[in-house]
Image 1 (cartoon, rainbow, N blue to C red):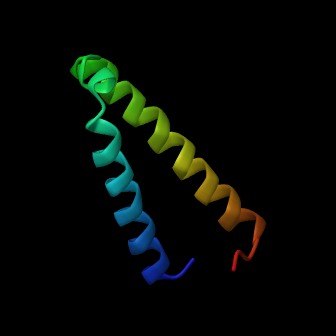
Image 2: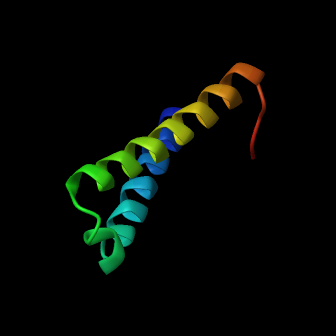
Image 3: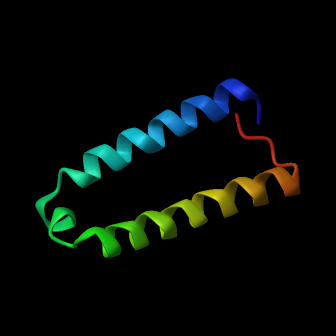
Length: 60
């Protein structure tokens, strides 16, 4: 994955998180649970990136 694609992906992820955090149900979770959900999503995204890089799969 080239650098530009990684930067665009990070910006997209941050944008999605900002939009998701506007939801009143997410705000009502509290800091600990919201942080836990963010950590789960980060682990999923990192795992997918590692698998894609490890497998040599070309997307696009």
